[in-house]
Image: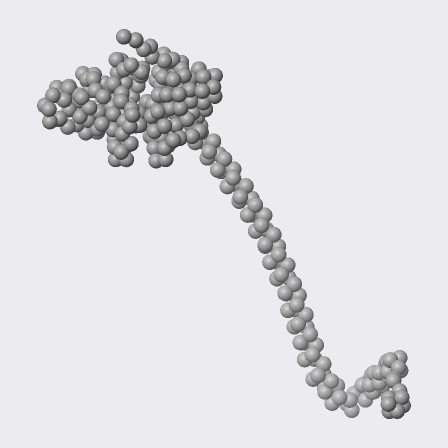
Length: 284
């Protein structure tokens, strides 16, 4: 305890003054006694120069580090901007692609409309379907308020899609010709031979429908068009159903059966054309 009391602290002011005096003395000696102080200068140079070089290298490395991290931040900011621009371009491209697809659908409907100028028609869009793999029953966004009633024929792609089976104020339900409950009186071949087109989802899995009850003597070839018959009680005459892909004679030696590919792609239906007119039904 007594030793601590007797100990005196040196004032920083006196320490600074002493170091200043020492520096002045060394400066004077180095000026007037160059040869005598050469060894001392060499000694200090050997100590100070490596320290200074190390400090310079550290400073350069630190400056390069700041420059590098600054560049990385700049690159990251630019990448973020580019990602935003790319996302905007992708969204625009998707929008344009959807618009082009819609335009293509409308163009197809327009071409289909020109094939049947004698009928009044309205375009409609499919908004729901009862089936998964095939559009065998579907709902369209036009109903009685638009003149769409039960019995209206529905067209798509290059031919007959089906018929309206239920109609409400603002929408309607359509049964496609591939549905198992569908059976259409049709004509085929150069002789316009009467026949029946049977709907079948099972057969559609293999890509065809059956056309039955064709007279065995009728002139029917692969590639012939199958159309709705004038004697059909619900469908207008001349609408394309499909094209013959195969013909076989039945075992009864009276009729023959054909396979057809449909004129409509029933795996993807978006827009349809509904014939507002309905075929006149005769009550017997």
